[in-house]
Each structure stands twice: as structure tokens, then as C-alpha cells.
Image 1: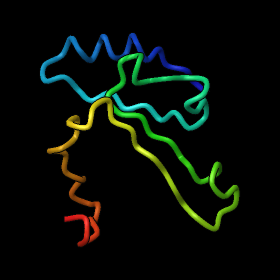
Image 2 (image 1 turned 90 degrees about the vertical axis):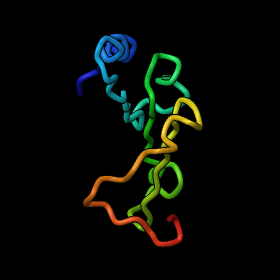
Image 3 (image 1 turned 180 degrees about the vertical axis):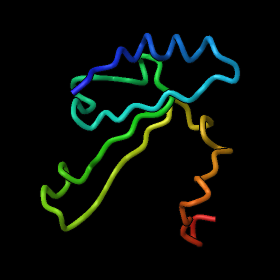
Length: 87
């Protein structure tokens, strides 16, 4: 496993224009041991399946943006189908 210096990655991203979004998959360390948003990440992802079920009978996840406004204009990639109720 490779550990990335999130603070440094965020600093490098801030040097570019337009600034790329810094996304961290924090599934392994979880919110108890690491806080990527305080280190400069824009979005943190978690796999919640193992915490909620522990089996393969469900799939769950969570995405936490730095601010609620961070992704108000974000669009899913063209290959992702959005549920009609979410439109």
C-alpha cells in the first residue's frame, strides 16, 4: 500500500490553474484515524459496506465534500447512468 501526503498533494494541486479536485479514498483509515478535509482534500470517499454489513449482500458508500457548494454543478461522467428520481 502506498500512503500519499495529502497536505502536499493539495498544495501541488493549488499551484495549477484550473485547480484539480483532490479526492481521497479514506476507506482504510476511516474518519477516526485520518481527516483528509482538514489536510486540504476537496472530497473524501468511504466504502461503507464493511461497516454496515460485513458481507457481500449490500453495497454502500459515502462521499463527503469540503463544503456543500463544492459540487453543486458537478455532473456525473457520461458513462454513469443517473437515477431518474435524482434529476
